[in-house]
Length: 286
Ligand code: TMP
Ligand code: MG
Image (cartoon, rainbow, N blue to C red; front, side, top):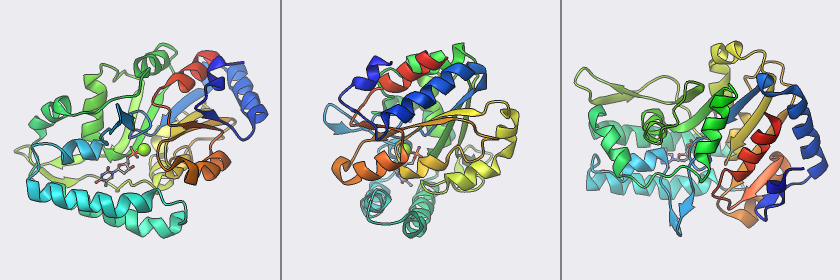
């Protein structure tokens, strides 16, 4: 049906069910569709030429806006909490307090660095941030078909917006839910705005943003893209959902996590650094 679904990176527990969902999305057409996607390691690459790519937090962590001391502390946090984030041996409930701790400590450290708003664009320019191969076709296609794209990220909103802008794909159909920086009158970081979003509370984040989903209430069908088990709840605010196709990037600890990903995502993309599959599905259904 879609040749890209035969790529070696594609795994599905129930191919027939996937085909049925795709058929029903196609029949309903683009005017009934909304796309909800995670940002870090879903729209951006996990690795390139054997080297890990930065998350939106890492773009700041690796920059000259942060002192060496602070870099060391942020690295320690990453080494402590990232293994917990991706540990398939712990439940989400067990992970929750650790994630709140990680984000709270990381944001406090960033605030201490008195980051200046006017330097963010240059920091993103100088970074190794990379959107996945095929990103332009993904964003452009959605814009052309008038399909809204919600980027739902536990990263740093100001930074990820800049990544999208610098790649010239921040089209008018794109909305972002994320952690935004709050700057004082001199343009210096003093806090983060609103309710904290971390990997495992996206459901609560979705339910807080009822206005957004209200606006899209006639779009009952969803294409969801994520790389974490926490991303599965990003569509929990959608009104009267009819069909949802969930595509999950399995980037790290592949063997250990494959079973649980196959049980939760309709299509699992194993170590696939491209947007080929989402793009092919979108071309077929819109
Ligand atoms: P996402 O929801 O856009 O994927 O963003 C969350 C990712 O950010 C998650 O995988 C962990 C990562 N992260 C860092 O890399 N550094 C940090 O300091 C924090 C708090 C999170
Ligand atoms: Mg992610």
